[in-house]
Length: 379
Image 1 (cartoon, one colour):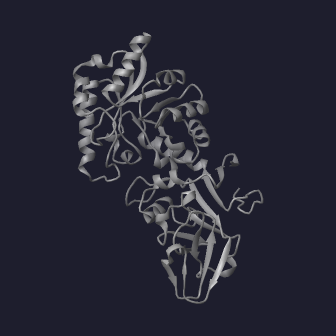
Image 2: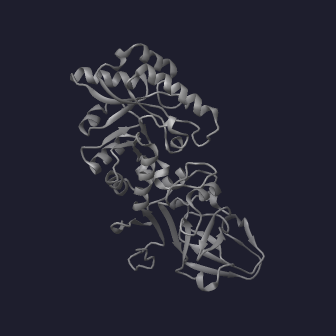
Image 3: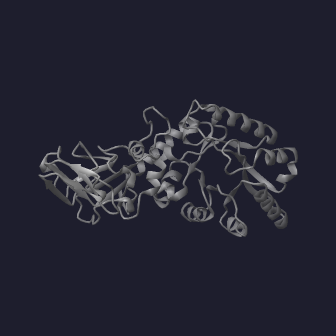
């Protein structure tokens, strides 16, 4: 299945996405939160992995509720999944987009009194009951009704006239820090609003929030990064299967036998002798510049450092410790996954998070989608 020397691969790098692992991760999450419903967050092109390939796998795995960021993402997902699944637009309706929501059977998450009034007025004008969800800000100071606005709604249910309110949502600010007291404060505030809006269903937990305990699960959870193999549990082994791996081929190996610098700025100096391999991948592909002299790769199981700065199209590795036979032009280096650093290790070295790594991965890669049940699906 994994024939990396295939002659039809014209790119110098392969991004491999394991759809069977994705399905397995969804099943794990669904079992953890049962009897609550497990939805899926597919915003940003399924975290950069390709919503056209990811969404059908999740649907086949039993997922019936999806979340995307904006209207164009929702329209694309509706075309992919058909009429049945529930698709929620987290950013809510912008002005003059109501017809598009209705035409594509998309459900807005209403985040302000303005959006709430916009949707209830539409329901009144059309003499219809319209589906929606309501987000209440319990500690992010981002999207959602403010506490003052939320209290207005709980004290005057007429604000919700004409709505088929599916869920009340909120979002945890510090779920990846289990000991942070803000988690409990947000849950307490969320409980208060649910009590006053009863019997509306609740949704609070993202991937990390799921692992704070069953009291955070409510009726629906909204995992994202865990689906794609990121670790949502700090300082613990990742319970989720690796979904993404990235490899690139060596295009040149340079022997250095005198003191020299490598790459832009001359920041990487070698006293010699060293061997430096160049690979055709750079920050234009989403291999972040902050990995300069911090990143690692693996060649035939040997860990090697990034030598010098990451440039637009190229990186250089110090392969001195790799047997020469294994570090020749055409040989593969693992950059994410495989025998190389995992997603979260790479992100830590780059000074960021796995979310940014995934959503930054570019389109110049040869993408290979794998499914153990069906073989490989090449894009």
